Length: 328
Ligand code: NAP
Image (cartoon, rainbow, N blue to C red; front, side, top):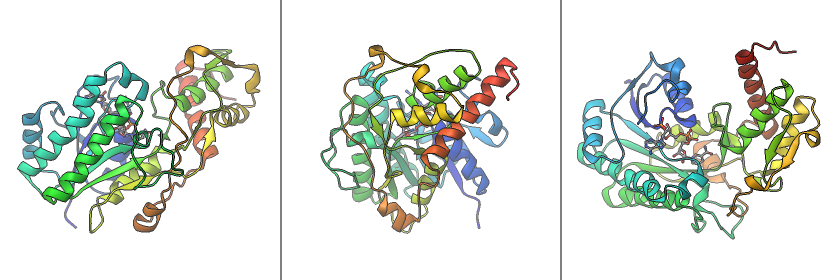
């Protein structure tokens, strides 16, 4: 089989790094784009730096995308780059739209101009459902976003669908529900909890300040979810798929699982702090991934407790290494 070439935007992110690993394992030649090549920004792909190639391309600059596609000649493009922290999109609503919405059109236009056979994956999000009154959400559920992030993702989702239908491109959207990992940014709640619990275990902290413990989310493991992205681009016909675990857990479940695993009583350490309560909370988001199960053969393999404990283990190990504290 001929070696395939993939281009990943946002390769330095959580999903980009796992996807790059998966594609390399499958024998792909992997290229990535990043706006920032500082060592800190590239930490998640540091172990891959001899196996992947970085290319200069900016989702705000149409010509740079055309040049990148001419140079790389990808068979597949995975568009993962975005401002991914939802609350921050309220601080940069215009940039969020320019980058995460119009950026998708620029990339699709570049494909249309350079090579219409390139297969395209767009990172859509459960945040597009926002204030949904339907539960669980599936591919045909009405979109009702509640943040500039969600609105930009809706635009990216619909323009992907439009280029598929109007220009006949092989373009797919994966509507991914929350997925976490040991590589998740510290600003995201699950990582804040596992990192905070590990710090408390090592005596580096005594308290963890959180907002509401009642919010519920559909959480899965990022390594499982990037496999769905790849599967979407291997089908006879392009389509959109919800990717989710189909189960929700509360923040309290998350906290309890992490602290219990470390032999700590969470009630002695967790402080409810109004400073961390965030309006507006999405309504209950839980995905129905039955289409992905039937058509792609995809399932969310890692359990909730498996996810939380692998994150705690990784945080404990990293912190212990940093502090040179031997693990018990
Ligand atoms: P992430 O870890 O935050 O990575 C985002 C990537 O986007 C980084 O490589 C970052 O690169 C790049 N990026 C951010 N802002 C940018 C900008 N203004 N210009 C250029 N590049 C920018 O996010 P992730 O969790 O891997 O998510 C990947 C994609 O899936 C995102 O589109 C996200 O919105 C979407 N998604 C994620 C989830 C989830 O639960 N993780 C769920 C649904 C959808 P640099 O900062 O290094 O340039």
